[in-house]
Amino acid sequence: MQAPFTRQQHLAIALALLAFALLRPANASDLVVVTGTHNPINHLSREQVADIYMGRVTTLPGGTSAIPLDLPASSAERETFYNEITGKSAAQIKAYWARMSFTGKGTPPKQVPSSSDIKKYASAKPGVIAYLDEDSLDGSVKVLCTLK
Figure (tube, rainbow, N blue to C red):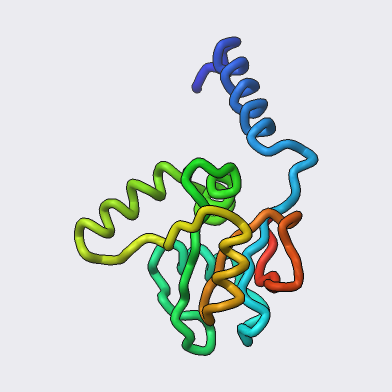
């Protein structure tokens, strides 16, 4: 029979839970996955979004080529997005794409500087999908998926 948790293990668990709770402030808005208003699709599941961002799927439902966009590596939204959608950190995703690119098995999502650039691309190019802070929404994009 295994011994119960030690005091140190309890403390480590409590600290890990506290750190997890602090990763995303309670008043932070949700992230949303968006596309241009002209795009005929109206919904993507979390799994479909993950498959597109991991390069496992290259087309949207209906056959349009998927063009995933990323915010800069330093953005909190990017870290939250990858944690939510894949369970991996942005650093782990960067390493994944380095391996995929090196072996010729894919290219990472295009990085754009800001939410406003995402909205410009989504409005101009069919197939663009991207993630934004919900507070950045306006009439130029439509929501395909909400990440809570």
